[in-house]
Every structure is written in structure tokens, then in C-alpha cells.
Length: 175
Image 1 (cartoon, rainbow, N blue to C red):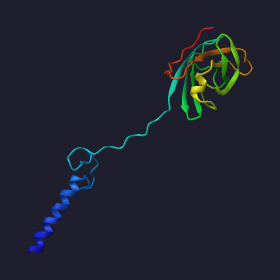
Image 2 (tube, rainbow, N blue to C red; image 1 turned 180 degrees about the horizontal axis):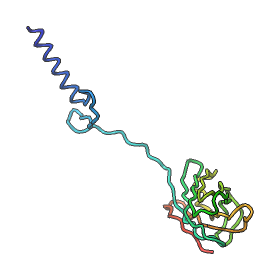
Image 3 (cartoon, one colour; image 1 turned 90 degrees about the vertical axis):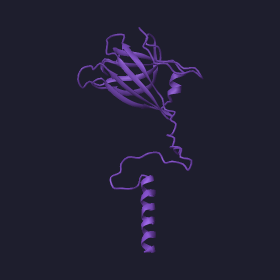
């Protein structure tokens, strides 16, 4: 008899222990913080801190046409992802796009080629940090087509950032 009582007590203690840990019963999909001996919830893992950031540049009408839209620049380590989303040009026509030195009114040389925009969209990884793009005077410019490279359909300035300042949302500058 003593053996049965001891077995029953141990079984009940095990059931209580498993229930308290959230492990008792099949299909238990809810969880609650584990309690410390003082009854306070245990500390939960802290998610990793990310230093990746992004900014949106407004792409306004170009010198010769209006296919305005946006460019989203996202820091990806030592590279920057540039995603262009503009009013579509002629269906299926590749529209060359670049990051130029200078301003929209005075384009300088091409600093970073971007994937051509097709049907209003383009995504490119640029071999420069977002910080470095913000330390210069750069613009994003899209052309009508390779055959009409001199026709600018949209342009926007990448906002400058000085050391220790928070980057601002970009804006286009008029021609």
C-alpha cells in the first residue's frame, strides 16, 4: 500500500511540474513566460540590433518628361540596394538609369549605373554604402530609352548627410 501511495504522490508531482512548465498535454500551443523562483517572469531573449536603414528619394518630373515616382535606398552592409518605382514608360522598353554626380539641373558624370527601369520598376545593388552616397552630391536620373538617352524622364536628389546628423527623406529638385 505504501508503494502505491508513493507512486501516486510522485505521479501527481510530475503532472503539476509539467503543467507549470507548459509542457503538459498534447496540442498545448500557448506559451507563457517562465517564472523565476521569485515568481517574476524570466527575461526574454533580446532581438539583435540592426543598423540597416533606408530612405526614400522623391523622383520628380525630368527635364523632358514626367515619369515621377520614388527611389528607396537601403543600406546593406557595404552596399546599397536601390529600388526604383516610377510611372511606367512604353511597355517592355528598357529605360537606362544611373546615379550621377551633380544636381538635376546640372548632371555630372555617371557614378553608379543602375539596372534599367522596365515597366516602371528596377532594383540594383550598388557598390557603395548609403552613408557615402549621402556624403556627396548625387542624383538619380532615368532616361527615356537607350536610343533617346538625352531625354530625361525623372530625377531626384539623394539627400546629403553630414557626420552625426540624422538622414532626412529625400526630395527632388526642379530643373
